[in-house]
Length: 438
Image (cartoon, rainbow, N blue to C red):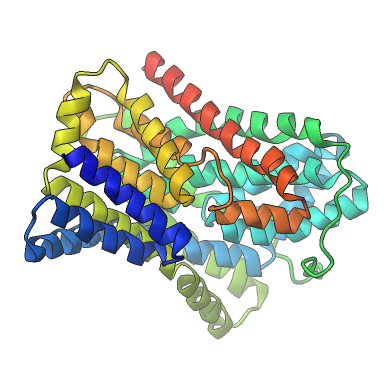
């Protein structure tokens, strides 16, 4: 019966979000109550599970998501993202322009949610397409692939970071493994895949192409821009590498572990950005704080959706559904890595939201890894990879791509949906390879 109840819950979640257009956070809360009642939980117990799930999820994630949004806004409004893009294009030249765009998308995508990173970079793609006369898809697909991979695979991005806490995985080690899987995934889904669409003659929609121009005096230096964007990644990777290489417990190692924590690393990066991209550029502190306030308001719903996913996960745990699934699936020979990827893929296809898909899948498959020896970090990446699969009408990314690249519905399926599916498959392949090696 619990499997029937959870299936009914997922169908209800799908109907609420896609048919009745109810906000994903409210839909998750309604579904959590429904699944709890079906499992004969008392209403007060369901409420306790929901509040507990929200509290435990937000307690570990709120600072990471907020600091990431602040850093992303500083990179956008200071012109640092623009500076990184233009300098990399100058450095690599037209022959390697896709590599420059990939690197930019990767750097911008790490602290920013996908939609924000897309909106920051799409005017630059338009400008490059206009000046170089290269096809729009040829330039845009590497950017989209890089943003999507960071969204699905890599902390400190909100979705992978949130499921890292659900699986009790080390975010720094997840980032280290994720980088090795992300690079080939971006190369295949970006530059390689774009070769199939070079004959498409697409032009930016006139009503959407509003490029922002920066004067040379407004732009921060390339060194300051790169250092600010990369500082949290440098700190987190340093912590992961040192932890693997030097397990000894001493005050210096403990200090590095502290500053490599995703919350602290992003906190440090925000203040670096305030100084290097703001104060040193003669910007007023009041203006900088307004930008930061706007950034936190923009991601408030992301926070609530993740909180709703945490509530749903807790109800599944407290109702005994998760333990029942563990017992049923425990007799199967399928790897938990493949199973969590499949579950995330199915929920993504039904619901559309990658964030909701990976959090829900993580809550369902968490009990399966107890005592298996499976890497919790790889479970995070496998779940994130599955949550990117089969994007279609119910995904906002699908419609953003269609509108900004001026494609037909058929073309959007041929490019965007294929790209997301390639990333999801490459992610699973990479996870299985790394799992075999470690």
